[in-house]
Image (cartoon, rainbow, N blue to C red; front, side):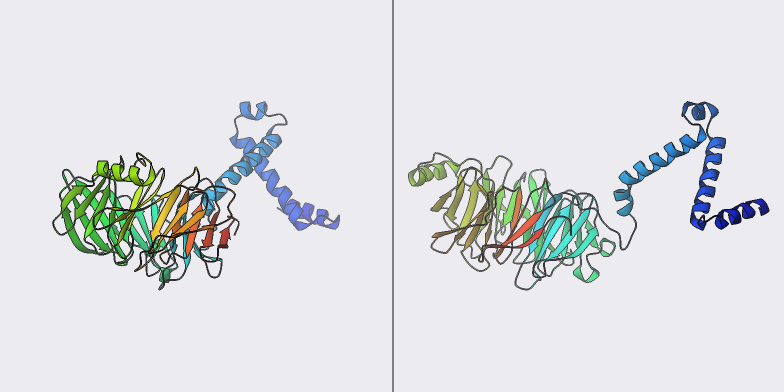
Length: 396
């Protein structure tokens, strides 16, 4: 030890820094340890012996650290820097009583909450990797659908998953519908020849009502604003109607619809139904299909209007305006159609140069969020102002 300290002092006298001296000492010890632990055959195989082997080990550690850093960073607890992965699912909290926010679910179990008014990232948090879909509920919370589990992140806890309210379901739901007017989750469980509809409060996740449905369910469901009717859409695009008071199911006559459609539009058929919804005042039904959007009278399913696709990409989503007959329809190329009560159509473009995979319209019908599931970016547009109000490049 005296010899070592004397040598270090001599190096200092010659102008060597303390940090450089300690670095050399550590390196020599590492080389010595590598020489002892490494089989002589391996050390001999590396040109330069143990010293070159040391450099090889350091290089391997640097490469491994480069690829392991995102994984390590995602597990280091509070204050962590989470990776910005591809977009998986989106939603908008844009109702009259909740802050206007964009909810973005990304790969690697990361959730973003963006303030639209401030154009800032409110929260970027870790969520379970099993999350398949996110829902922005009326009071500002975020609902996570995770197969046989449902969770809710509270804005008061900064959307912390550690303080998440969650429930376990008996089985994976055959369909889940968010009822915005009642701020409720409609959970459909297919049990052989029958289906059970369970209505959960979106804040507490406690069960409020249960309805039996006398039919097996194999596709998506839409519950009417007054909670009297369920529209059931199977995997082949066949539409059925259920009266919740009795649980009876009635198929919609596709042949009659095709005959009336040909008289009105000249089209023999529109193709399988992709999705369906009620206008908020329960006057009309809107169905969109590969060839366009179809408006039906909700009472007798009579034809009201047919809106053909504006381009080869077709419509991607629609939304009813609260307490009104108005309807907002968005095409995959970024065209927005607003249909008023008389269903005169006003068209607005959002100036996009590329198509997108997913979109969602805010509860008030003022904002639309567009995203591509192959990328990290999303845009939120104001429909009335026809301009972009928020854009995330994934770098913020």
